[in-house]
Amino acid sequence: MTKFLDSIGAEAYPTLIIVDSLSVILQYLSLDSTVRFTRQCISLFEQYRTIGRFSICPHAHTEETVNTIKSLFS
Image (cartoon, rainbow, N blue to C red; front, side, top):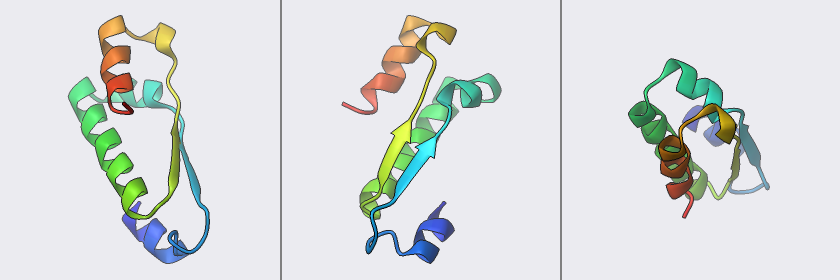
């Protein structure tokens, strides 16, 4: 993702990156790995002044999982 952001000059242009979907990622990775991935994305988006949009299907996960993911955006 860093190479992509470097190549497009994200600081100069409004950029929107959509991560669709955290629910799919959670099918293949643990919650901890998904949290680390999401935090890294958020950090990169802030660094490059890029807008990130994440989606998740809350009905596919436990309340604890959904709350953990939501807490990353507070």
